[in-house]
Amino acid sequence: MLSSTLAAIREPDSALAERVAQHLDNLTKPPGSLGRLERLAIELALSQDEALPRVSPPGVLVFAADHGVAAEGVSAFPQAVTAQMVANFAAGGAAINVFARQHGARLEVIDVGVAGELPAEVGRAVVTARVRSGTRNLAVEDAMTRDEAEAAIAVGIQAAERAVAAGCRCLIVGEMGIANTTASSALLAALCDASLEAVVGPGTGIDAARLAHKREVIARALDGRRVDADDPLGALAALGGLEIAAMVGAYLGGAARRVPLLVDGLIATVAALVACRLCPALRPYLIFGHRSREPGHEIALADLDARPLLDLELRLGEGSGAALAFPLLESACRLLAEMATFDQAGIGAAP
Image 1 (spheres, rainbow, N blue to C red):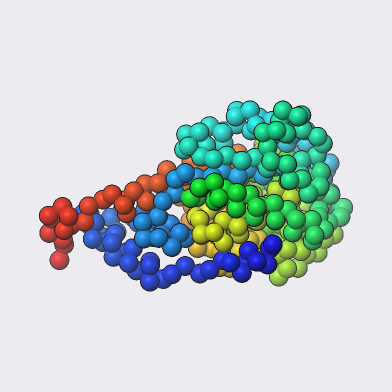
Image 2 (cartoon, one colour):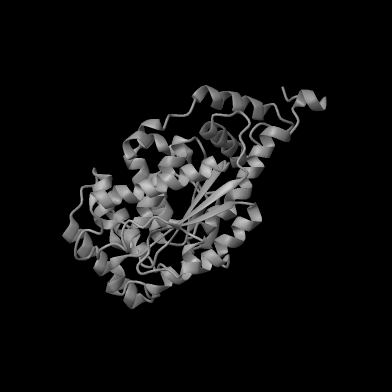
């Protein structure tokens, strides 16, 4: 599934970009006066291969999984919170549920590797696609085998396919997994050869002592796994998470079906980084929703040459920051479809 999905991702049509840019310059405004919104409109047109793109209704995919490295005490919360938050998603009580309702989004929660059994009423409200019950402890051994990482990627591809088949025109990809900032930070440090001081932040809110411990755990993992930065799948398997791998698949699957992909914070951006290392042609389909407070996010954004739409000092995850940026995509589409040209308005264009 991975190889066929990679083969289906095409570079956007540069001629379409020129046509859309000309249309924007003919609208009743000074050329370029709507700034980054105009560039966003072009990006959406390219990703959908449509001069008049549409992003509604959006689809929200939240992948949940646990991490063996949680046993090292790197998070402010116990591992049981992953399953508890999945139950909260199922009940409609999380931040991403609120924003999904606000945008009329189709929301799907996917259990790709939660440790332990979910209550029956929760299980009925989520998609069960568990590859294994949590990763192994990456400080001690590889988090996943390559086959497990590919299986989790396939879960993400299939989720994207379901969303597009249901009529979603844009995908917002989120996650839940206690200790996943540890996994994503380790993966980022390995792929970008970045220092742990620059990469590793407080995650869900740990104190200075635990932050130092978190860095030490990641240092042990990097020393023990010794991944090859030129082997993104191997790096993902050694240091990543099942939900991170599923996000990689969702990005690839969405791009193969020509839908724009709204990227959330640190963990989502690290998944995007892995996906782009697997398939550089993916990059034009990615729109970065916000800048996280996690320090490593800046490094991941810089590697992807990405400039987020919002900076609201968020650090929640779930796809929440990406969902908050969605109205800007809707505005960009409406700009192309509804704003009058100079000829239509009977206004003389600037010389």
